[in-house]
Amino acid sequence: MQNVEITALYAGLCALLVIALAFKVVGFRRSKKVGLGTGGDKEGSVLVRAHANAVEYIPLALILMLIAELNGLAPLWLHCLGGALVFARLLHAIGLIGGRGGYHPGRFVGTALTWLVIIILALIDIASVL
Image (cartoon, rainbow, N blue to C red; front, side):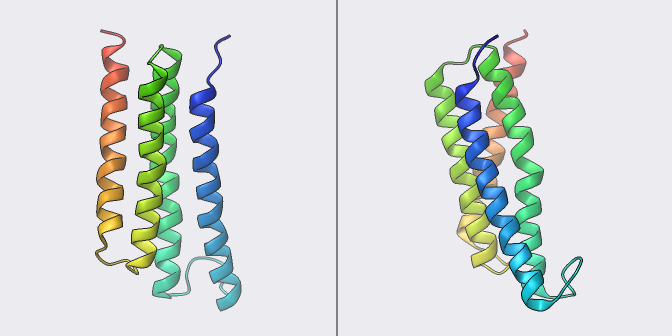
């Protein structure tokens, strides 16, 4: 069985980011005494979306990365793409929360970089079977 240490590293880092974002949601809900959802609070909506957005994009990117690693993509490429993914997700979270749901350069760049990583990994995976 092949080791997948590089994907494991970035999966672990992304998992810590998801938990940090979840912690912010829980903190908001506890402080506002909101059991479910956001109670109509804009700050809560932003925090929930920051967490949800990470949960929506990270698994797809990691699955694509895992496939690329299993198919023998060079470690340098895996680290570049994994590092870019973590950086992108951090930028997005900082931008979404810092911009309070409005425009923020971090949110824009984080989204664009996340999409770019996913597209590159998808193309690499497709090319590996052609």
